[in-house]
Image 1 (tube, rainbow, N blue to C red):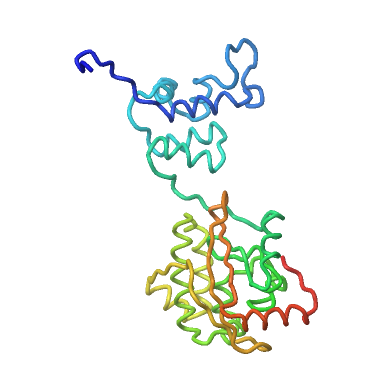
Image 2: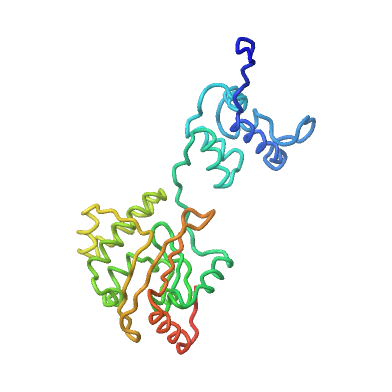
Length: 286
């Protein structure tokens, strides 16, 4: 091939193509724009720019692949203007900047029924779903019997750190409370920072610092841990020592939530828990 006459193909503009597709799917009338005399469906470029509070020229260049890389602030404004979901917003950031957006914490008071059904099918393994600031928002019956009766607590008290440091029963259930507590504080710090939940962390930390000198000292140590998987042993008032292998999983589409499953470490541990589940009266799972 004679390279002197080779035609240089333009680079594909994946971001511009995606933005154009998204704006074509919006209803201009529903967003307060006139719907008459439109040659193409959806919003016009200048209408997206208006909603995003950016220059129409700059937005046009962005769709055309001109003008250089956009800033994170511009992509945030465009994402809001196009009413993108969290997944779509993340996709726009990868196309425009090659990275995900900064985390935005979203308060959660519960989970979808399908997630609760997943928890309930995991018996005899205790399992729960927690937020990035370690509020427990869903759990199964085994978790109630082995880890704690979350259903008996007001929703704002179902926080793992609060329980670990302020509930004497949680302390009594640990064979090495100080080691477990330090691990919990370090892993919590990582999860909260990763989720962008600094504002939500402040009142919880302030309260625990006032109520627990031990928490205050551990928090000031600034240790960090990763709560991905490990082994946990509990002292249960009826079963005695019970060992678990735990694993934490991200909930797809909900970066603010994680599922933690405590699998019995041995067949004997599983049999103990199954016997307890059979003999104990029914209890509220969430």
